[in-house]
Amino acid sequence: MVKRVIILLLAIVVGVIGGGMVNQRRGFGQVEVHIDDGLTVAVYPDSGGNNSYNYDPHQTPLFTLRAAEQTIKLKHGIYDFVLIGSVSQYENPVTKLVVNSSREGISISPTYTYGKLNNLLSDERSQIQQALYNAYPDLGGSYIVGGDQLFDKGEWYGAALQPIDPSNDRLHIIMKRSGDQWVVAAAPQINIAIPAYPNIPDNIIDTVDLL
Image (cartoon, rainbow, N blue to C red; front, side):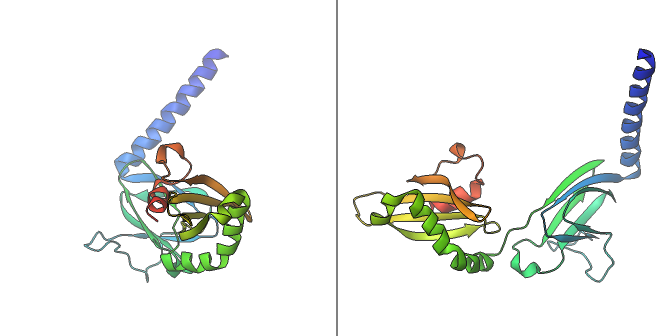
């Protein structure tokens, strides 16, 4: 019985390795694709010209993918993963991928444009600042928001807190949306250290510290 199990396991391993080698020899790769909720993506071959993206939007896409984690098979080459729909609100509506091995991966997680984020901030600012002052009641009489910004898809918020008394230090804070609430992700401090907050994207920390 044990021998049969061992033989079966060996056969499975050989099959997996053999399949990967066949894909490699034939110039194909298995591409694991992750797409954020609510998005639809078309996959086009990229001609590899001088421009950033070189696909023909009039061509039928190789694949049309909707929000999920899935695996597709592509020949070795260059491909453009293009958002379908209201793409003007996204900063990066096209993601390029070079397939040159038996396994590749790509994550489609575009961020909103600066203009889109500013529009969202106009609607969200009062709720965010109310949550901020609820978390730190003493700030209300000592600091005012001197500059603020939303990030990514509007789920991150950063602000500089300007002291009313100029002898005090300027502070920075980061908050994050959790459901329909805003919670503090990095407490008010002079500079937010990246190593201390591994769950906050580095680019957000860097930007907030410069506000």
